[in-house]
Amino acid sequence: MKKTLLMTGALLALTAGLALAGPGGLNLGWLDCGSQAGTENRVFVCNTNTGGGHILVGSFRASSFMNAVTGFSAVVDAQSGGVSYPAWWNMRVGGCRASASLTSNFDFTGGPFNCYDYWQGGAVGGHFMDAPVGNRARYKAQAALPAGDTRITSIPEGLEVYTFKLTVNNLKTAGLGACAGCSEGLCIVLNSMLVTNQPGNPAGNKFISSPAERNYVTWQGGIGPDCLGATPAKNTTWGQVKSLYR
Image (cartoon, rainbow, N blue to C red; front, top):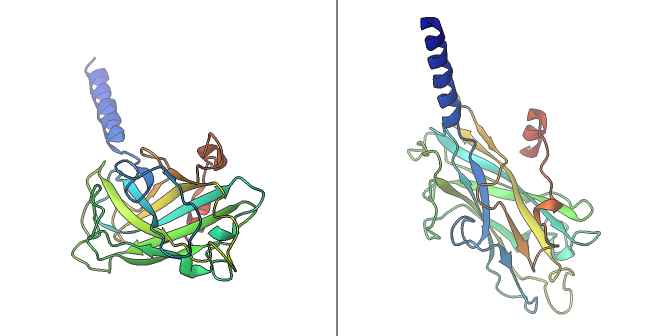
C-alpha cells in the first residue's frame, strides 16, 4: 500500500510538471497585437501611390522556461484566392514592387503598448521574402538582442510579447507602372516562430507553431470563409523546422 501511494505521488508530481510546460502561441494583427487592438481585416481602395501604414504586428504568448531570451525568427505565409500570387505583394528584389515597399521594424518603444515590449528598442534584425510559388509566398523576419545585453532576461509564461512590425506602403499602386493585384483578397498567417534562449541555456530554444488567440489576418476581405483552411497545419520534423530559418 505504501509503495502504491509513493508511486501515485510521483505520477501526480510528474503530471503537474508536464502541465506547467505550456507550449505558448502566436498572434497576428493589423496595427497591434492580435489578442488586443489588432484588427483581423485590412481594406484599402488602391487609389494612391503615397502613404501606406499597412502594418502587420506579430506577437507570441510565452511558453514555459523562456528564461534568457535573446531573439526570434518568424515565418509568415500568405496566399491569394487566384491561381498566381499578386504582383502588388511581390516585394522582393526583382519583384514588381521590389524590396522598398516592405520594411521591418522591431522597436515598440513608441507604441503600440497593449502587449509586452521585451526588447525595449534593443533588437536588431531584418526580413526576407522568398520567391512566390503558385498563389503563395513566404516572408521571414528575425531579430535579436546583442550578446551580453542586459535586457536578456526571462519572460513569464503566458505573457504576450511583441516581436515584429512589417509595414507595406502604397508604391506602384495606381496609374502608369502600377502593379496588379492590390484589390485581390489575401490570407496571411503567422505560421511559426523560433524563440531563442541564450546559448548553453539548459531550457534550449522554443519552437511555437500553434495559434494563441488568432495567428492570421486578411487583406481586402480575405479569400473565402475559411482563411486558415488556405494554409493547413502540418506535422513538422526538426529538420523541417531548421530549414525554415536558414
